[in-house]
Image 1: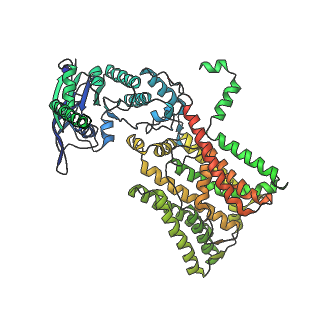
Image 2: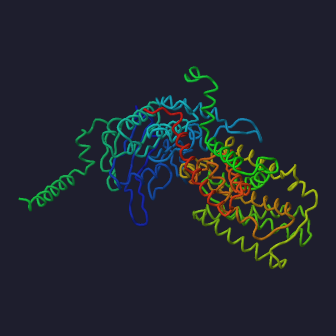
Length: 271
Length: 338
């Protein structure tokens, strides 16, 4: 299905340099409506920089960014948001000491009345927030006036994702949404990703968890030291191959040898 | 939804009221008030006795409400005391010493407040320095300017002024012992409550104090909102400066120095979270009342008043602990664990 339509978001030969340091080297990627693109990579591989380029925080040094096939240059994250590219960060995205309804509409508060009688429509905000959460399968939250601080990590991610989709996100960038969560909560987030996909949203799922990626991904890309190391579609690699690639393959073999030597030398005096 | 069927309506209502964050502040006020009624001479509860703590609570409250809003947005303002002094002294010199137009003088006083707030706000938002330090700087600067300026211009740090009757009506008329500042306070409290709970601005204020990064990403103009709040705290302080000059027929350069911290104490006793992001205006109203019951109440007990700060310190600690507990209870409400 994906091949026939235009890419929602595309990077063409993007390079990003920071004062002489090259953070991204010739990166190209595409994500289509209703597709989950998993972006894998170790810490420091350039995932954060890539997200910042996609979400308009950084501008590419060279190369192009295309939204629905049209070239774009964002001056900031707000412009990217207006173009339908929403980013949900691992931490934050919600304010713990504010209610579900108030969080959901932060910056886009619905109002009723006119002139000096214009006021925040709390009931409407709480009702819509609850409806949208429920449509993503979050039923634990029953009071739109409850504070977000009482919700679990997965529920908070759901609130951010529901909010992004409600305000018309066509591309959803999820930055390590499962990293800080337990198994159950992470499963909830994976459900959310599939639900967003079913609604035709293009999802960029950034993670270093191979199992989470393989569970929901349609297309995969691995970033190593700022370059695209490998790229494949669902089913083209086995779990073992991916794990090996992520761990650094040969580097892992060397490490195992080194550790064996350390153990051997540590045992020596007791013998 | 099911709970409304099972439990009677009034029980539901009680749960709702007691879970409100300002409820603990209200209970604290009632307990402390009753305590002083019991231990004081039998004049404390009379109308005259009440006015001795109610009037200062009104003046403190006028400043504490915008200070509370600013603290909800995660910032401090220590400069309110010196803005009060500067405004008070300026009006006394302008009208009492130079005999210029009193209304214009009042407008300039408010403009001094607005300008100080604007400078505080711009310094804090541009430099990203802690507002605690920035406003401490403005506080000291303006204190010096007020004392130095009044001595330079009038040769004295104390200037007399008798306001015309229309000005007196507006800023110091009274009913029995109660000053009109109570009405100013009520108006500002209603406005503050409306802004915080019923407007988009209120949502932004809470979000900025709760998590400024999230607020920024959601497109909230975090700098503009904070600058506006700094202007409101300084203008409220300028208003109290005007009220005090009119009320006490003159100004002393040392006026308002107690406001440096007591506006913050009133806000914290009133349930405002020191780190920002949480609080209510009703809480701040009762915070100011509680503070003044304690400071004024001790004079009615016959105890040595040297101890009053010890009492206020204890009150502050108890208030912070109680608020902390109630906030956790509020967070736990409305979401089932599972």
